[in-house]
Image 1 (cartoon, one colour):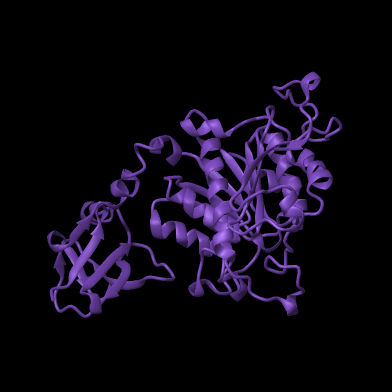
Image 2: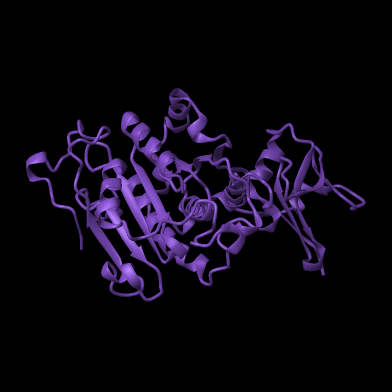
Length: 368
């Protein structure tokens, strides 16, 4: 069987034009499959050195002679990557958008993949946590990422799909930063997604996003991931996360938010037992949240119909039958409800904003 040696077209053009200082190329050797994949000119943790770059070709490891560039099989990765999305979204516009994730855990990591596969190419990832074995059942990363910072692991996931993506990562504790440092992290974003379990961090993100006039999205799961909440906030148009907390206390107080240290369970860390169906339940919440993210990034697209300013909270239930307190809100598996959240007239964050609905016509708080 003849071995195929493939390389992305744009990568080959860089080699031919001499627009690289790299001496080596990196990728994967799969000789049992008759395949060698040249994937990068930069050293990456999950790629091996394939060969040495020469002026007229590549000297592959363990090959007796250099291989001319003309004998490499090229694949049009960058073009084909977005080819199927072009008629659905404006890929040229969305590729220029910058999305900041505050938290890249089980929800954030999957949302990152959804957006990167939708041609978003600029990311800022903030999370101080490392990837552990308890994350394996629900996170987008895998065994190769154990003990790594989640930001670095998720960054590599993006690059495996879009090697041209621009990604900044920060591993410090967001709450330990000064206001100016926090603001600097979020500044310049087109959308900030707070998918962290930390309510204090969400409060801070909400305040900074209002200061910077950046749309934000708050995504979370309830106990055992049987249900989730998705709140989008557009400064000057919708109520904010601070107002939503008043709503949560009055309307959703019996719904239990998942513990930060114990994965989606009311058990203590030593008593934790795996929950079946966890990943697919989170996936449903993530899919809905990702649709809202695209709507916020492309407000002139057909997805803009999702952005009902008066009903900016979406509650979703998983594929299980609603039980207990959940049955008072949800009727069926996969139920999705739009909630109208009353703005707190004394809200220190958004009370001075010119909410488009007007104070005199403030809608009542309800879930329907």
